[in-house]
Image 1 (cartoon, rainbow, N blue to C red):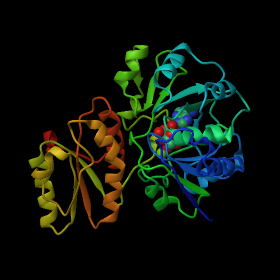
Image 2 (image 1 turned 60 degrees about the vertical axis):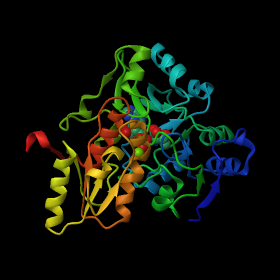
Image 3 (image 1 turned 30 degrees about the vertical axis):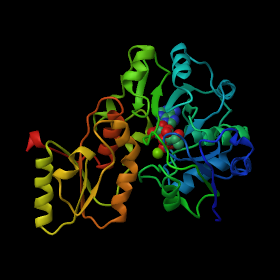
Image 4 (image 1 turned 135 degrees about the horizontal axis):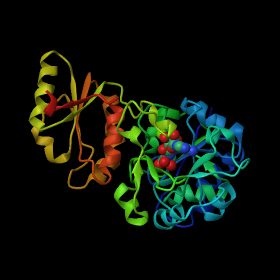
Length: 350
Ligand code: TXA
Ligand code: MG
């Protein structure tokens, strides 16, 4: 399949009339799938009302069909069309965080969306992205747009158009290149169908931020307990994984370096992922620095590109530092531990 590529500056206003926006919007109306940037990661969009279109998303990604997609909207009017009723807490969260990296799980009206989008559930995840290109395309198409992250299933989510090309070129109708995304990890998925909202996937909006608006917020116990089935079907799959085995190391840099030295003495090529502040404490065959401890948002922004960099070099094993779990660090560590298939080496336990 021919994959058309457009480039657009995300900082310009009134993108709506640009051919880089209207052409992909027309393809979406015609039932094709197109990748576009959001403030979190690149999404792979399709008309959320069309079975045919949504089927192409699952095919292109190789995504299991029991994993529902997030619906992206550009106005509250679109929301009213899709969902049954909007609880007061959800309303307040929308007012505070939309457009932005927060997906709200709400009950949907029957018959308004393809059943493939919701994987047959009576709920749907909805968000309004904080990105001019994404909003422009949704408005120009005049459709609710179902969009999972635009990666091959199992790989790290794409934070640049280049990442999308590596995974999906030739498999989708188009890619809109709007430069690097900002947040770097996906949206927070919050179940708002229950009295006390539950975080099903930590992400761009933190627990602390949510609680400041609506009081108590719980976290799906399955996020911390491997034995329990997660409420967001997507969270049960191995995900975000580089090709070489990855271990998350908890402890001092000297402890991580000792493991690296042991591996290297056995002839293995070792990759290390560490915070900027610790760079000089390590020696490895390949070092990647996603960001700085001084601002964990930089680690979130750089995380997926860092994981993908290891796929471009010849390493046999990757050792990553762990990061503090406060604020955006919760999402960083959730993704990192999933990327490692929960293989964690803790200095305290050896
Ligand atoms: O930042 C993001 O959210 C990105 C950008 C493109 O918007 N999208 C994204 O979509 O990460 P995806 O499909 O890769 O992840 C959607 C997550 C999955 O874990 C899925 O199981 C969960 O949301 N989800 C979607 N609908 C749900 C529902 N009705 N109930 C529970 N979980 C749901
Ligand atoms: Mg994804």
